[in-house]
Image (cartoon, rainbow, N blue to C red):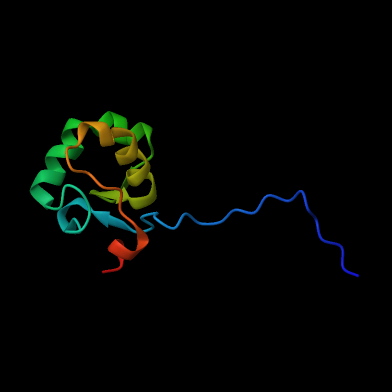
Length: 94
């Protein structure tokens, strides 16, 4: 008989998490706000909040968005975004 720990917490990945990261200039079309120009504006307007959420990082001189943290930030802002639907893993992989 094998001993199985019943009180161990298992970390399962969220099924709707955005796991990728990307540069602002190559913003994915399937992720809000869908266009690099609009994304630059969003980043400038909410830079402090995004940095506090850990959604932005820099690689050299390029700013990179960390997908899973950006999604968490977006979900908190969803009431301010008309027509926003949280991305699912199926929509991300299309």
